[in-house]
Structures are given as C-alpha cells and as structure tokens.
Length: 94
Length: 230
Image (cartoon, rainbow over all chains, first blue to last red; front, side, top):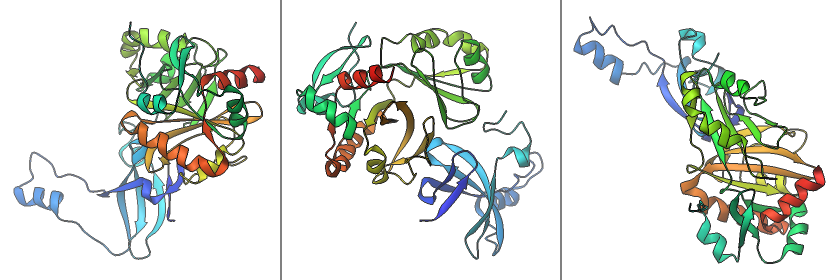
C-alpha cells in the first residue's frame, strides 16, 4: 500500500486521494491570448523530477499541495495551499 | 409529526427489529433477544443510530460561534470531545465541526444549535444539516477494532487510535467518519457516512462481523452500556 501524508488527516492509503494536476499559475485574464489559455488549460509540463501538484483527499473534500518526484514516485512533502497563496487561500486554516 | 425513518429501515424490519421511543425519537429497541444482545454488545454489536439528531457547522466563525454556545471543542482537527450532557463535538477540519446528539437521553444541544442557525450565519458559521445526508451507526465490543481492520486502512486499535480520535477515511470503500468514544469496558466507534450508501454499509459491516460472532443490537443495550459507564 502506498501512503500519502495528508496535512489534515495524516498518513493514508493513496487510494483515498485524487491528483488534481500540476500547480500552475493562471495567465493574466486581461492580457492572455488564446494560445496562453490553451497552454494553461491543456498542456502539461510533464517534467521528470520533483513536481508540485494539487492533491485531493476524497473523504474530507480537502485540497492540498504535494511535491512529488515523478521519476521515483516519492512524495517529498505535502502542505497547505496557504503556504503558497497566503492566508486568503482557502481551504481551511485560521 | 412523522418520526424520521432510518435510511436502512427496510433492512432493520427484515432483521426483526423492535422499534420504540428512545431519546425522544423512534429507533430500534432490540432485535427480539435482549439478553443475547447485551453479550453481543461486549463482543461485537452494530446499532443503527440514524434517527438520532446531529448537526454540522462550517466556516471561519464556526469554532468561535460554537464555543459561544457553550460547546467544548477539541483544539485540533480529527478529534472528538464528549460534552457534559453526553453529546459529542467532532472537529472535521480547522473550520468544520460535527455535533452528535447524546444517546442516553433526549437531545437538547443539536436542537438548540440548529435553532440558532440564522444567528450562526451572521457569525460566519454556516449550518450543515447532517441528519438526512449521513447514516449513523455504532460499532461496539471488544472485537470492534479488529473488525474495522477488515474494512479500513487506519489502525483503530489502542494506543494508535485512543479514545477521542477521529478518522475521516475509506470504510468498505465508502467515505466515512469514524469516532472512538469511551463507554467503559467495551470500545465504541461511531460510524457516519453518506445515507445513500447506508444499506451497503450496514450489510458490509454485518458481513465483516460474522467471523467475530457479531450481530445487530438495539439502543437498549447501548443505553445499558452508557449507564454502566456513568
């Protein structure tokens, strides 16, 4: 069984989680052209190495971020979105 | 007023459940053999508590508002605190709380909190009506943690999962909330999940309980356990 350390629930079976894809900054809506939007929506970097991804714990509907090595499938670190986006970022931390 | 039905009402009736008034609601008294059930509750018993009240609150003001209503909350997520009246407050995250009404006597806390929903809304604590959406079972007895090990990846044994612990996890591949509470000698786990899957959860649990000699039990034995604990 592969274990994912969830920042809310602790270590859990990876089957309780869904990957939400890479953490990518959206383009500036006032300036981005169609190509920039297409790149943001449909193209993935698919890097070999440590990538930053959204993950979702299904039983608690809880989104968080994980650094994962796509070569070894090792989960390096998991943390709350507020660490990247500040206190305004939901979900769920005072 | 029509009494609320359990989401597994048909399964309960098919199993020979005898219904009666408990804690202000109509629920299963026993399954026709009270003496055997008392022993089963110490070994491994499964009770349906779905007709009993429960309510949730979520939002940045949820903790403060509930504390102002006199609810004692655990400090961290995934913990449960039994209130002085017997109700249980469960922190599902930093900003969400689930309150289970007491099983010993008629609920007062959930009704009071639900009646204050508009006031809570102003305090950014948004009420979550958990009664219709979630089934509520209680698994009790010395083999309860071993039985859960067949259905769930989280270690429910002492000391890994002490009294007051909460796991929101997969139970028989259903999303469920599992709460370990103290009723004296026998461990008791409250199990809550999506009411649409209640029949499946009930059947899966009874199936997993077979090898331990487990059986469904009514509220009478749970009341007896709670009284002994007092």
